[in-house]
Image 1 (cartoon, rainbow, N blue to C red):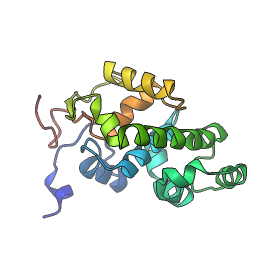
Image 2 (image 1 turned 90 degrees about the horizontal axis):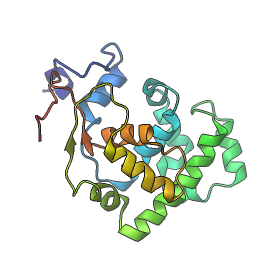
Image 3 (image 1 turned 180 degrees about the vertical axis):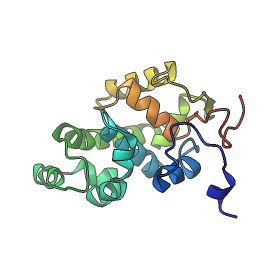
Image 4 (image 1 turned 30 degrees about the vertical axis):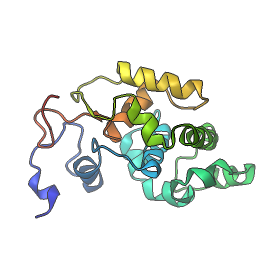
Length: 190
């Protein structure tokens, strides 16, 4: 049976009329992620989301994947000024000069972290001892954990890595288990 049809109650932020948003909530958001490429994609999408809605980013996700070489941090780290100009002309993504420049900078920081820790996954999940932290889906936009991770990433040179952006990233990557109690995906308190 289709997982989406089994879920009757979802977190309050989900627009039930938007199949893309429903699918994202039901199959991806809050699911512990350990693949470095996927973590990089989620981090970059959250950076582009700054000041915008998640729907705006989610609707352009395929455009981002195409424009940013499948979110390959090695390739993005080598983007030239011409590559950045190409991105700024691409209507399939959010065309913000500072965010495009940040994607290049952040890819380099991401690769440095991989080199130092063996993987970005080891670095990220090291903040929680390798386990997801239960945190209710409320009106909060930061936490002590997002403050800590944000501070560390910014010290390393990441841009668009404030605590609010990192909080959303930690939820998306499942480091924080954010589903509300009334949601069928709620796992209970840990």
